[in-house]
Each structure stands twice: as C-alpha cells, then as structure tokens.
Image (cartoon, rainbow, N blue to C red; front, side):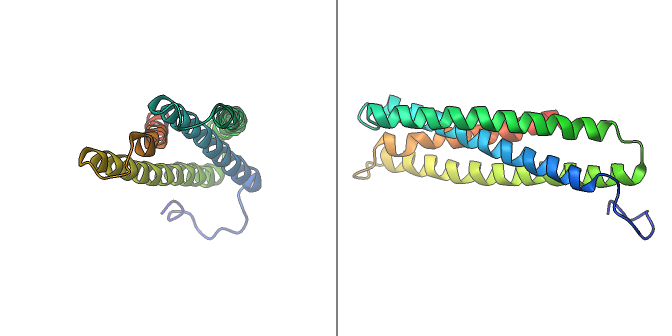
Length: 166
C-alpha cells in the first residue's frame, strides 16, 4: 500500500542498507534491554517472595547478568534508534521517505507483536499460578508464579512507551 502511487521502481532508494541495519540493530538492542529488565524484576520478586528461592551466589549472578544486559541493550538501542529517527526526520526525497517510513512501521509492529506475545504468555503464567495457589493446588508456591510479573510489566511498559513515543 505504501508504494501504490509510485510507478515501477527501477532502483533501491538511497541508503537502504543503512536504514535496515539501524532498525534491525535497534530492535536487537531493545530486545536485550527488555530481557535484562525482565530478568532483574523476576529475580528480585523471586528473592523477595522466598529467601531460599535463589542462593546468594545465584541471585548475584542473575543480578550481574541482568545489569549487563540492561547496559548493553540500552546503549545499542538508544544509539541506533536515535540515528534511525534522525534519518527519518531529515529525509527530503519522497522515495527514501516512503521506504524509511515502511521500515519504521515494520519495526514498531514487530516490537508490538513480540511484546504482546510476551505479555500474554507471562500473564497466563501469572494468572494460572495465582489461581492454582488460591485454589490450594499442592506444590504451587508464590515463588513459582510471582516472577511472571517481571516479563509482564516490562512487556506492557515496552508497548506503552512505543505507543506514546511513536
């Protein structure tokens, strides 16, 4: 639909490879950031729910991994997203604008789709475990389902932030 008013395209718009690289790297950086945040929230909730859930070494290792993923993911995402956004606002050629707009939309809808899937699965895990715990199912403890709040909250924040910023 984006290209319906444009005749036959004889060549690729300028900077196509760079545009694709910026959006792909931005998505990978954001995914790393989200995984780090979800791990941080989940392990913190598990630690608070049960002192025996993670030993001191296990908690420190999960904490170190999540902080590393947050730092690396945030740096990669911010750098590439800001470069992609700056390129989008600085385009004067109609063909390049259409191609970049298409990539921008593809990035956003991919991110929305992945985030909603993560929110749906984490929500099912959280609700299922909570209901099983409420109904007194044997062997179900809060430490088994409370950490699902981590990916659920982070995925919903990712969707909300991208809706507001885009």
